[in-house]
Image 1: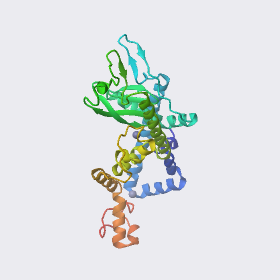
Image 2 (image 1 turned 45 degrees about the vertical axis):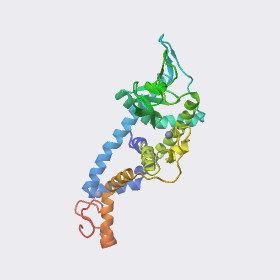
Image 3 (image 1 turned 180 degrees about the horizontal axis):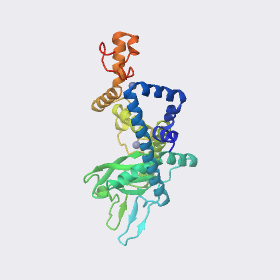
Image 4 (image 1 turned 30 degrees about the horizontal axis):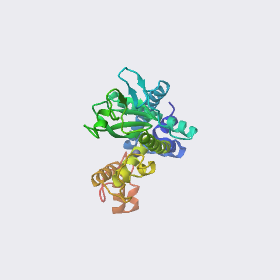
Length: 308
Ligand SMILES: [Zn+2]
Ligand SMILES: [Zn+2]
């Protein structure tokens, strides 16, 4: 696979920045003068093609599930062994955009499908692929991963008697309703399909811009400050349709443990830049250009007054 394609798959349109001649020249110059920069370049030269290859493998899995369709979700399995599918909820999406977003997300969608199967989940096809745990575990919710709905959230003996064991329908002695059965009827089913379809839109746009990690990253950060039904992605997708029963305010409600974790992670990632900034603050601009032998300024050791 070409370098450009690898970058596009892994980092979206932002990956194209790495292809700019000026950026490439600057990176090559730094790698020549700094051992750490050279090492980082070697790591990137492995990580980016590997993640691109994984995404291509995922796209193959997703394509396979489109060519050989999965069992429809909510199919009723009668005592006789006959399988009667419930109608798949229709979501009205502009056809070209619908195809485009499926293609953009195919890598991640396929990896979610394959990963779900690998850990022993079952798969079915609704308006999108779904992976879920078999009974006796009862699905209570999940997340969109690419286009695939991963019903990871389970409860023990959850919900009403009719909802337990994933059988979703009252008086269900003769058939089993195959699927996660999070919704309790066709209307809820259709509403949830619209909600998840909006998440697919969000994921497709963000993946195009910055690759597959952008949506989960932004969602997690948003959720740390605006948890659950306050989350902007959830509000944009529709709270009622998404099964959020309570409507809290729109003001932030920071989850300090998560916020702390994010700050710690940011400090780790930006460690070398913060260190360089500390030297500039302590000793003025000129310290920003000084460096240790075989190191660029950013990768030179020493905080504040110490260092080159
Ligand atoms: Zn360096
Ligand atoms: Zn949602």
